[in-house]
Length: 435
Length: 141
Image (cartoon, rainbow over all chains, first blue to last red; front, side, top):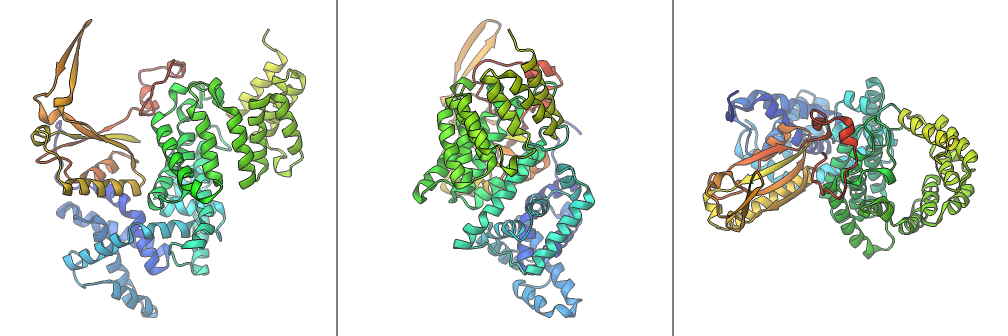
């Protein structure tokens, strides 16, 4: 191609890119109308096929969203006409089709466009809440959300979760069946119900992020594609619910954590703990977005009592992000935030991190005292970070022999090869302390 | 991938003509769409080149040139940073942008360097070597 050559004709690539932008909203609108996410996906795909045959000739229409929706509705209508058993749905769709005939007719397009604008993303929010409904397991919610909202293929989801394509496909099919069986409406829950269901949405987005950020198995510490996808979902949600402190808090948390991505692994792929990372390598654009989002979340939250778990976790991440050098870290503030976090989100893992924070703020003995209080928790049995933290406290307290056996225990427990190497190196350092 | 999207100046914008209310509103709606799609990361507008200065570097010499500058179509009037899956997606979004400038104008999309790109001319050791101070980077590399 000559330098600077212009593109007139729409290539399939360009059409598919436009379709990807519209896909989630298209599926959302169709799913709400048909109460069937499977059929919605199918119709969206059919609309793409029509676009691929028409747009190279006509160009991308002024409102591609409305155009695709008109085609998909027309397809749905034709399909139901053939199927007399679905008389009711047929009427329902006919009612929403303002004009018959060519989908290119301006009246139909304009009416659909107006209707879509009215919803202002409401339908997409409805789809997100339905795909993340608490009747589904978190794993099923994650797979379905990545498929219908994120637009990932089953194969991509399987690779991201180190699972087989068949397993993920089955998980998605079952999730769709469960949604149909429960008769979910694809509406956005309002008021108290929305507040009650929001945590299951946020949980899934953070689960997707963590699957990418802190891979629990395999050789790569980071699967950045999932982190990016989770951040995109978080941004979509923050764009649709800008007045919710926890939504903003989750996005801020993910952005601040993701800012360390480039600094978390050394040249040999080995894990580098936060206190030893090269902070010049942190992504300061993400940090400034995260700190900004956190400030807005805290301003919103201060009106309604205690901060929620995501705002608190974002505030924790922000303590690290604000420190120009590791030595500048405000550990007493981190310890205080953990004291609050364990009240709103009690968990043995939070308790363990709290022990680590207290050890940094008030010395290794403080950490040892707190970690001994939780050592018997069932959830922490076989949990590598527990002996790893204890080993660190003992090491800093000068009790090297005990530290060594804790690091060795942690190395046996972790499933991540890189982390194991890191822990074994620490165990070795206990046996051969530097002079 | 992260891209920077430049809006280039036009002769009209360089003369200091402010965008109309409609143009502002249209750009606002477009930005709102980008935000709701999870694509928008940051954006800023720049004052015209009468406010600008250029520093010409030639060996050890530094010469300062005051604006305005002649080449109106080559100047940057503003930029946005987007997070997109690929260049196709960036192009599809940019085509939806209202004309950011009065008159015929250009939008240019430039991908950020990422760590994987730097690997071509930096060794993993160089990449990992600690660097002093705050870089205040906008990108990942």
